[in-house]
Structure formats: structure tokens, C-alpha cells
Length: 295
Length: 236
Image (cartoon, rainbow over all chains, first blue to last red; front, side):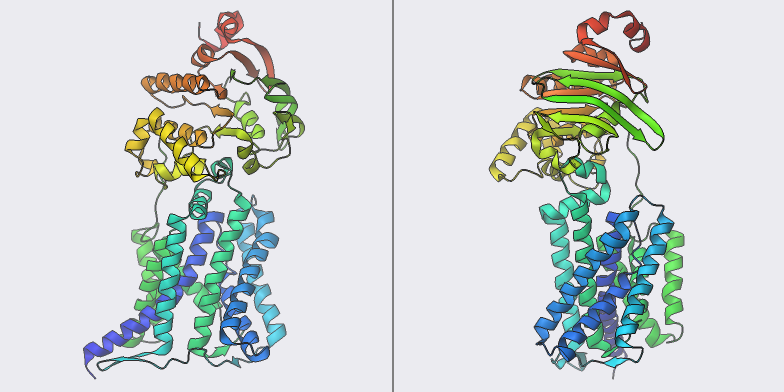
């Protein structure tokens, strides 16, 4: 096998995990943009999505498409309810209170899942039956192909929604200035709920793709991808939607290439090291903005 | 019946009472000025009327309907628009997107297009810059955008908070000319200003606000001649 082909394979692997990070990072960045908070329970929504898929497939014996739908619906409801119950009452509270609450929600989700499903990892077969493709000597697995297609569709439709629709511009308006948005007749609470709904639906998709990749579930499965995606969101510039996509992809690529060519043990250290470097040089992240007041 | 009627309004920020039981009315077609020093409570009143702040006591009626408890986002569709202090245009959105958000509660696409044409006619500069980000506009242009955005909701009454703040003298005159035009086209205007002279020169009636109380009211031209107003607000 040629060295070039090997690099290409690692590159594609990086794109795969990177696009999942990007999907999750979008949830962090959108919620941050609109509610000015880091939703640390976001990673655990991935776990909820993964378990919902498992319940749909292995307990309710639903067809795959219905199990996916179940996972999407459950995550969306979780996202909206968590915002209403835990975060909305704290909207004018100091940021630290919100942060602690978010961590609390994260623990709550993990603990409840532990109570219901236990700590022993549960195997779950992938729903991707497609064997993959071969281009020349290069073989790309089915899950990789599916992941790349699904995440691309998600990112394009999300960008279209935010940039081109009335609801999307309302979201951007609320992110920028809630009071002024209210004066336009925009229901700020509904818009925030919608943002949590979209972010959670994306996390559900990430959860489904994650299960199909690793084929095993445990209550803490969302923690690591969650924190990596958070890093990706900060790397790209938290609050920026294209930044989250870029940050996710870059993170995935660095991770995959350093695992392959430097050291598996050091790969996380390299990933976080690059975050530190980027933040030293550009504290607002790659595509983040520093706002200036105009008189 | 007054178009907008405020009765015994009291507003507090925590322990501090900002508005101490004020009464005022705006009749249809009038230009009303609310003048007073910084901190007198002018902005607080406008924010309470359009639902951004909740009042402690009192009543706000618009066209006979009690809107005191109505959330802010439901007030626009009744026909009340608010140009906030400091303009607060959406800096990362284009001029056109800002204007379209002004018409957020309206549904008829053709009518929105028609209003947009009217606004471009009144503010040609906004049409020239329609695809530019609002944050790149000058202060005066942003003020025009904020006004245009408010007019996009096709309001019966428009509330303006310090429209001349931070603008060069040329723009100040232009903005006040535009307010006159808006009034001439049939929209009722309630304007809050520190620039008392300019505000009184275009208003029909005015109220003078001091530390949360209305201390003086009357025809604008009378207030321009009033000795205490002259001394306190006109620098004469």
C-alpha cells in the first residue's frame, strides 16, 4: 500500500470524525450565540440520542427509519424541555450559575441513563448495512460514506435555514440583540427554544452516527465527543456557525493524522495543544469576531 | 379617545423607582415630545410602553385596548413601532435583512414589497446600501435604517428614543426633517429627546420629565417660550 493512499485514508477518517464533531459543535455554538451560555449538557444529548435509537431498534423492534425518527424526536424534546426547566429561569442570573446548572443537567442525564440502562456497555448493531466503496486501492467504509453525506446535508440545510429563511434571520437577530428583536415582533422565547431544538436534533444525528461507528453504548458515551466538539466550537470561534463546521473538521483531521503518524496516546494532547495555540494567537477563534461599537 | 393613554404609571428597577406615577396622552396624528435631562426616565417610559419593561403600577392603553401586560413582541402587530435609543440595528445582518425584520409580523409579501419601495424612496441611501452589513453604516445611516425598519411594520404610532443622539449637526437636521415627513404621512409620533430645542420645534405638544415625574406639559410653542424650560433645557 502506497504512502499516499495511507495518508488519504487517514484524511478521510479525519473528515468522518471531524464532521461528527462539527455537527455537535453546531449545537454548542448556536446555543452560545443565542443564549450566551455554554450548554455542557449538550454532549449528553448525543448519549440520549444513541440510547433512544437502541430502544427503538432493540426493545421496540422498530424499523431503522422509525428508530431514527424516535431518536430525533426524543432529543428535540429533551433539548427544549431542559432549556425551559433549567436554563430559562436563569436567563438574568450570573453566568456562573448557568454554567453550574448545565453541568448539573449533564450529571443528571448520565445518572438517569445509568439507572435505567446500567453501567455495562450495551452492544448495538449498526443500522448502516452498506458495505462501502473502493476507489482504486482506496477503500472507504459504509459508515464513513453515510456520515460524510448526512453531515454535509445537515450543514448545507442548516446554513440555508439560518441565512435564507425568515426564522433564520429572526434567530440571528435574537442572537445579536434580544430587546431589539422583541421590538420587531419576534418571540424571543420561542426562538431560543427553536435553537435548542435544532441543536439537539443535530446531536441526535451525531449520536446515531456514533453508535453506528462504535456499536456499543454506555451512559458516558457523550462526554468525550461533547468536550471535543466544544473545543472545535471554541477553535472555530464560538457563536460562529461556519466556525463550528471548520473547527470540527480541523479537529477531526488533526486527531486522525496525529493518531496515525505521531502517537495515539498523544493525539488528544496535540488536539488540545493546538486549541491553546490558536487561542493565544487569535483569542476569538478562527472565524470568531471581536465586536466593535460604532458611534 | 386618545390613541395612547398612560395612567398613573410607575416603574422600578429593583429598589429604585424610576417613574413615579405619570400620566400622559397622545392623540392620533400628533407629534408629542418627551423632554428631560439624562436619567429623567424618558427611555424607561418608552421601554415600558412597548413591553420591554414591566411596570409596577398603572395602565397603558392603545386605541382603547389595555396593553399593560402584553409582551413586547405582541405589541408591534397592534401598530406600534419603537426606534430604540442607540439605534440597535442588527450589525451582522444586511440592510435589507434589517428592513425585512421590521416587517416580521406582516404576512402579505406584496404589501411588504410596497412598503419597502416607500422606505427606499424616503431613504435612498438605504437602497444603495441594501446588501451591506448594517454594522458598516455610519451613525446617521444607522439611524435612518432604524427608522426605516420601524416603518416597515406600517405602524400607526412610532416611538423614537433620542433619534439625534451622537449624530453630526447635518444629520440631526435631516433626521428631524424625516420625523416631520413621517408625521405628515399620517403616522403619530412620540419622540424622546435631550435636544429639547429641536424636539420642541417639530412637536405639537410636549411633556417635561424630571426624576420620574412630569413637571410641565403644554403646547410645544408655549414651552419654547417658558422661562424655566428655557433655563433648564434650551440653554438660554
